[in-house]
Amino acid sequence: MKEPPHIRWIVSDIQQFSTEEPFDLIVVAEVLYYVGDIAEMRAAVGNIVQLLAPGGHLVFGSARDANCRRWGHVAGAETVIAMLSETLVEVERHECRGESINEDCLLSLFRNPVSDTP
Ligand SMILES: C[S@@+](CC[C@H](N)C(=O)[O-])C[C@H]1O[C@@H](n2cnc3c(N)ncnc32)[C@H](O)[C@@H]1O
Image 1 (tube, helix red, strand yellow):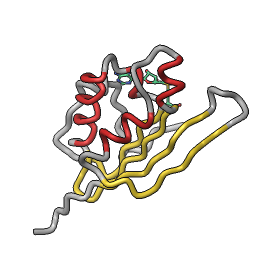
Image 2 (image 1 turned 90 degrees about the vertical axis):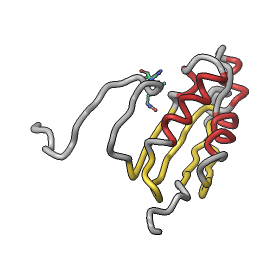
Image 3 (image 1 turned 45 degrees about the horizontal axis):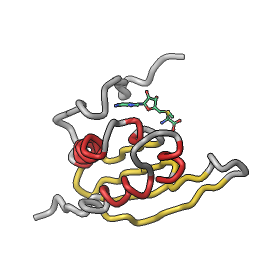
């Protein structure tokens, strides 16, 4: 199938990626707990937030802190949601549970409150 011409695929480290054009929508799911320690996680969150356009939305999904720590990561959903909430407004949150102990995630929708109107 031919790629639509308005879509550009970029493979990048979430800690390094930058662009001149801000995004209206960012989806980041089950990625941030792979980013090293808390300081690196905070830096990655800061990088993502500054990629978001004024009024733009960010969908964040992750396993909860407890499972991420059990898997050997420093933190998970609750920690990242707290970091995102320092800049963005959380407008919706869902708890996603399955039958296994590993299936326990949070899914949050954030909005960038910075308005682009003067
Ligand atoms: C568990 S998978 C989740 C994939 C997908 N987002 C999903 O929800 O199905 C974790 C993904 O995080 C990516 N990842 C890990 N560290 C990353 C980083 N520093 N920058 C960008 N992607 C990263 C991995 O390449 C992998 O594709």
